Length: 305
Image (cartoon, rainbow, N blue to C red):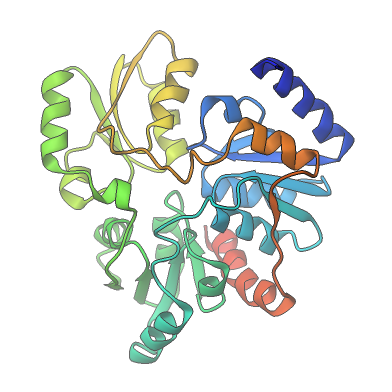
């Protein structure tokens, strides 16, 4: 039976042999983290996928991230190591439903969180990630915005841009959405000296209690650069683990154990290994019209953000 380290060594060998880059979202576990060529949030991964010279990409994240990489890199082969790794938020609105919303609000620009399917991106005017949403919406010429699908992130952006008019739909990340002010109260009672760092996908009453609000990489960078020694982390629990490795002189606590994304945890080290061996994973295939239409919204994100 090979050890974890032996599998990691084989992965390093195989990705060079196959001209493959491994992109890893920050919500992956530490073992996946350590075999990454690049780690980041959705925005960082999108930029890196576009700039990377390798012929093949393995996206250790969820399906919409792999689709985004394929849209930006149509001439590369993009693989999702575990085909079951989806995103409930990305799948909660259909293309037909979005088309109906566009007809209902024809004077609004559709701003789609990157946590959406490729199909939805074909109908969007621009995409955003949590790290660039405020800047993109600020730079958008239209003052009327239909923000999909996360009303929590949308509301956070709207508060920063009172000059704009926003419309939202019901939805959001089920894990972030489940956080409550009571969770914050309990965490602060347990860790009174800790700063609270949260993701803007959390509900408004949780965000209002935070010492810092930002995307996953923003949260990690804040904690690393802060002189403070204790932090409560209000996003996926993997961030707690990564920060514990990165900053062993500091203490990190999860806002709640419910902040565990089973889809992000679906990918294993052996999934990556077997994908490199051609024995597992799913190649992301999108037709040319979908790529062309969806690409526009992503290019606009990069231009405006």
